Each structure stands twice: as structure tokens, then as C-alpha cells.
Image 1 (cartoon, one colour):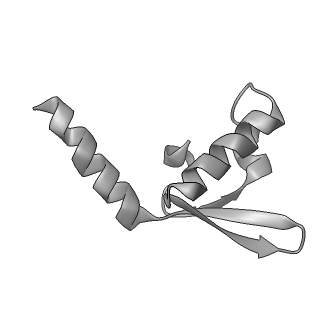
Image 2: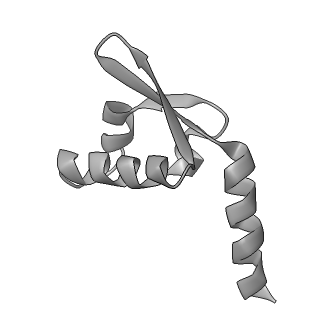
Image 3: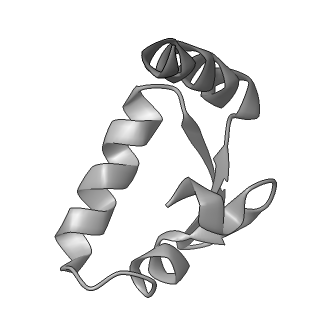
Amino acid sequence: MTLHFRGGTATAGELAARFEHAWPTTTRHLRVLENAGLLRHQRDGRTRRYTIDRGKLGLVSEWLAWFDR
């Protein structure tokens, strides 16, 4: 999911449109990523615009790289 809006923002609806699962699944995943500190949101009226926290994502990438060794 994160690759689809790297460096930018996207709404939950824009993200959900890219996948073939139910809306609650998308919002649940967004909540998990947000609780982990990997994702932030800004309210724009009734819409939430999600942005990746690239610093935290870098830490996850470093940790995952350990498995490639």
C-alpha cells in the first residue's frame, strides 16, 4: 500500500480503490499503520489525508534488511 503514495498523500477512499477487499479492512489496516507511527493523517473537512512517516518507514526497512543477510 505504501508504494502507491510514496512521498505524497492519499485518502482512505483512494487507497481502498486500489484493492479488492471491504472498506472496513482498509480502515483497519490504516489504523494499525497509524498506531505503529508509520502513517499520519490530516483532516480536510470530512476527509482524512494520509501521509507516510518516511523516517519511521526507514527504520522498518533497516530492520527488514537484516533478513536478507
